[in-house]
Length: 139
Image (cartoon, rainbow, N blue to C red; front, top):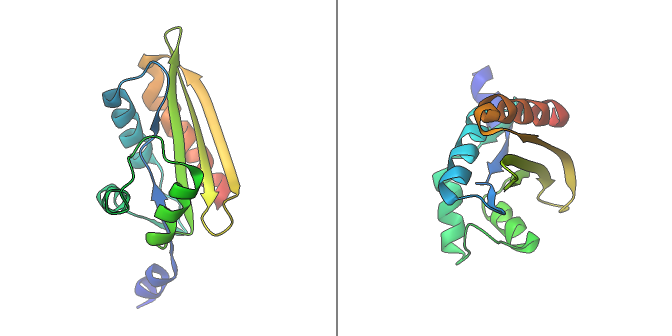
């Protein structure tokens, strides 16, 4: 019973696929987005399934890449999410760079952000660090 009460109180969080930045492929962006989602689990939030997020994006007629802030917020409102996690992946001179923001859907303000630059071979460790750092910032 207590677990059910806690689950019902948990607010929703939408973690979108990272935006395709400079010099990266959609495959790279998809892989790093997936890795981020597997490491991002804040205790006070229910992380929505990416399939549900993508369905809302499609239903609204938006493209997964290149959405405006207003479009992102509309997706969050449709999902009834309290916060959204959005990021961009770039590659320059052989190094990857990722910047991630946690946005409050009701106000449109960034409540936390984190980023880092890393070599391809270090992406798992670096993405896990970014995800866990953001979790600590919002709890």
